[in-house]
Image (cartoon, rainbow over all chains, first blue to last red; front, side):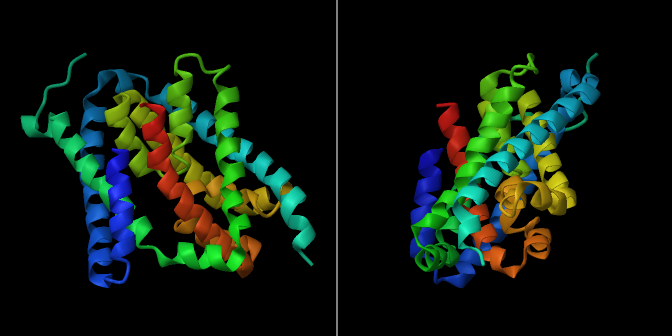
Length: 89
Length: 183
C-alpha cells in the first residue's frame, strides 16, 4: 500500500506540469472516495454491533477528537511560544 | 438481530474495496506529488517550516495515548490510528475498514468529522488560548482546504501559506502513518 503512494508521488511530481492529468486524478480521487464511502456506509448499516451501540460510539469518537485537538493545541502553544513568537514584530 | 440484505452480493465483497483502495492511495500520491506549492514554500520559508507539523503529530498521538487509559474497549493501536486520521475522515475510515474492522472505521469516520467541525467552530477560541499555531494544528489535514478560510480569517493572511503547507504534509502522512502502524 505504501508503494502505491510512493509510485503515485513520483509520478505526480513528474507529471506536475500536465494540468489535465492532475485535474483528472483529482476528480477520480473524489469519485473513488465516494465509492469506498458507499461501501463503508453499507457495511456499517449492516453491522448490528455498530448500530446497537451508536450512542456509545458517538461519545467515544467525540472524546477521541477532543483528545487529539487538545493534545495538538497544547503542543502548538509550546511550539509557538518557543520558536515563532520571537520572530514576530 | 439480523438484517436482511436487499443489495446484491457485489456490494459486500471486501476484495473490491481493497482494489479500489490501492487506486485511491495511488491518486493521493499523484495529487500531492504534483503540488508545486510544497517546493515553492520550502524554498521560501527554509527547512524550518517542516517543523510545524510536529506539534500536530506528537500532540495528537499524546492526546489519544492519554485517552487510552480511560477508554478500555478500544485498543491503543486502533485509538492511535483513529487519531492519525487528523481530520481526513474519508481516507482514514476507508483505510481502517481494510486494515482494522468496521467499528474502528466507523469511529475514525465520526471522530475525524468532529475534529473538522470543532476546528471550524472553535478556531478563534483555540487561537486565543493556545496561540496562532493551534487552529492549524487542530485542523490537521483539513488546514489546506475546509478549515483554511476560518484559519486565514482568524490568524491573518500571513498564515495561509503555513496552513496550506501543513495540510499537504499531514494529508500525505495520514495514509503513510496508518499503514505503517498496521504493518
